Amino acid sequence: MKENKPVLHRVLGLALGTLGALGAACGTDASQEQATPSAAPSASAGPANAVQHEMRLLLAAMHKAMEGIAYGDVSGLPQVLHQVHEAKSGTEAALEGGTYRLPKNPDGVARFRELDEAFHGHLVKMVQAGRKNDVAAAAQAYAEAASACNGCHGEFRK
Image 1 (cartoon, helix red, strand yellow):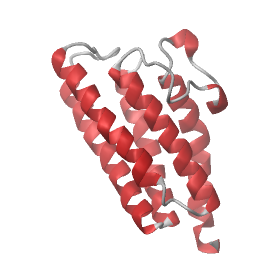
Image 2 (cartoon, rainbow, N blue to C red):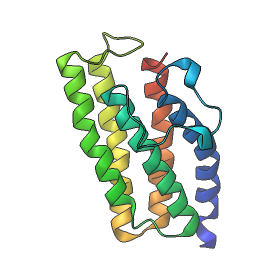
Image 3 (cartoon, rainbow, N blue to C red):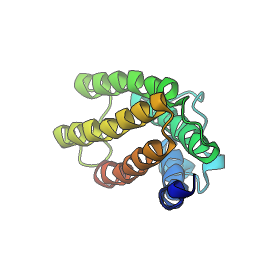
């Protein structure tokens, strides 16, 4: 595991900020944003919309990924990330049907979809790593996914 330490240190640094940001993304409004991941809404909390539902599942999956990386067993990632993938269709339907409007840059749906596809590509890499129980590959994909969160949030979240 010694050869994984640089990757793990990088991932842990990204994780602290990202999990807090994901937790805040799950709130129903800015007044509910949380400063710490432990205070974030749970994946089972009732979502106000399809995007929040997907973000809550994503938050739970990222927690599971960090735990797996820390303990050296990422074999559970495919199952939890599959739930996120299934929720993605709800987000897409809400955007398509007009029941969800992007809070910032609402006319940028095409760009949102572009970033979302790229983000889910990182999640696919995490699934592949989980199937092989390849902790280093999971950590690298986690870091890429965590970095991608900021781009979408910066463009589309108030």
